[in-house]
Picture 1 (cartoon, rainbow, N blue to C red):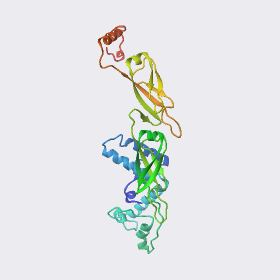
Picture 2 (picture 1 turned 30 degrees about the horizontal axis):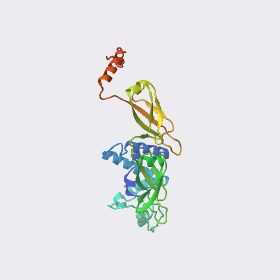
Picture 3 (picture 1 turned 180 degrees about the vertical axis):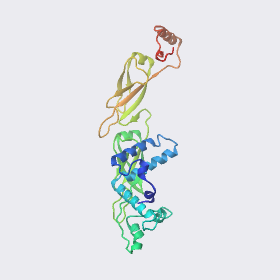
Picture 4 (picture 1 turned 30 degrees about the vertical axis):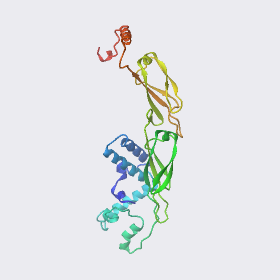
Length: 304
């Protein structure tokens, strides 16, 4: 147990009740992680702090054993930290020292705290090691294809297997690679949060890839078959006549493949307008406009 366990209400950090289910805790964490993700809030120190707080809270509450220990610690902290009731008031600083060093409330420290009054001896209790959080940077293609990479944790090299199709902000649990346990207890776990880099062409929304493709106004008006890139071979896409800018087409099965499913490629067309026209081109367009002088796309707005 650490000093911050008594000082910080991790349930409040995640915005859930103490009776919240594991599913609700995970859902609340993911919502906060997305809301305050550094990529969505560049240069925002407050958002970065909230993001780190959410990760710290989920490291504890997201693990069943750690959560039980945390709840117990909070209860004992209230017991020893509340004046009255026949017990001497004890400050957090008295438990941990001014430097905030870890204090084993359930092991030797707990026995020492209360044993002096009762004359009992100090008992060394096995304590599982703390969990460790780390981040790992991945390229867009590494996240899509999956990869095994190494991290340096407490001076040791740890191999982390990244499954294919992983999303930015996802966390991977590596069992037994956290801090060592005390008195023969098992070590904690390592939680790795992945940070996926961007791609110069594709975007990503879950299992789907997104792509914006420019088309000419002639292709938009008359229709065309265009070639679009994918993560594999290029594919043909039929653009119907009369397609407006912003129209999105779905190319099935060309998204991100994961262990559960494969997403699609969502292609959004953007109609481009030439910045300069030759005299002949201008004349042709004026001739085209004269063929339907009553056409007014702003008529529904009451404008000419």
